[in-house]
Length: 256
Ligand code: NAD
Image (cartoon, rainbow, N blue to C red; front, side, top):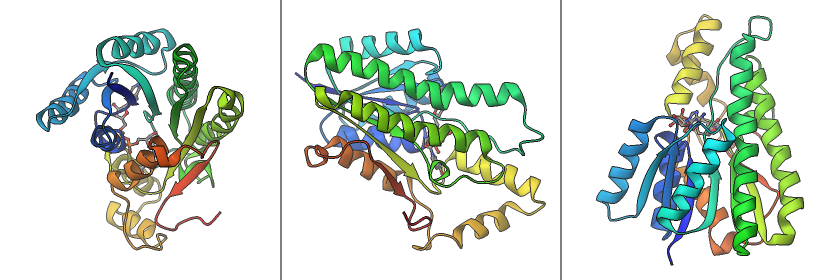
């Protein structure tokens, strides 16, 4: 029977690279995204390369819809083996100017969406009696917070906390729970962060990007594939003895 990896937010960016990485590791991929069009594009590209994948439109903040999409993917594609809570949103604003609705939505998607994903995955893994791998997107901003990213940083610190708690609770079922903390990855999310930060700090986007680049020891931004490689390791047989960890994938920005 084929084994299944669910990847949320796999319509673009890091999630799309993770979908390809896990497909290359032999898994069928359930591509979940709020954006039906990009989710379908990812699946079209995967199937064109001979991989098995199917797209499901879902908002991870809606627990019931999320659970239904996962059950549909299990019905369509096989036994659940890997579950990646990658979907996330960001906005840049000062605390004093921040909009309550935007903060609530960010927490709903990033923190609660990850909570629901862990809950949904854990229940299915326990039912299967199979063990499993849960892998969550945290961030460098969840290791050291940044000005103008208060809600985002809080959500990502929370995801690291959830990762630790879930790993302790689920270890008895042979379910591992880990997280990845990307630094600067050139995706639409990062473009939006740079544009808004530059605007608030009255710099050009190029100056903002150069300033960030100067903080990266390896002298380059991450590609989505750099991050997907770490997720691939967490999901692989070689990663079976890691749990409760969150690992920086930042080319040397923060040393912990
Ligand atoms: P991105 O914006 O390029 O892609 C995110 C994807 O998630 C999109 O396809 C989007 O449609 C989907 N999505 C958003 N809200 C959703 C929802 N409610 N339900 C389902 N899908 C939803 O972002 P990215 O840069 O690829 O980031 C992926 C993850 O990595 C995020 O959790 C992000 O916070 C984290 N991260 C990114 C960076 C970076 O530099 N790009 C750094 C640290 C952490």
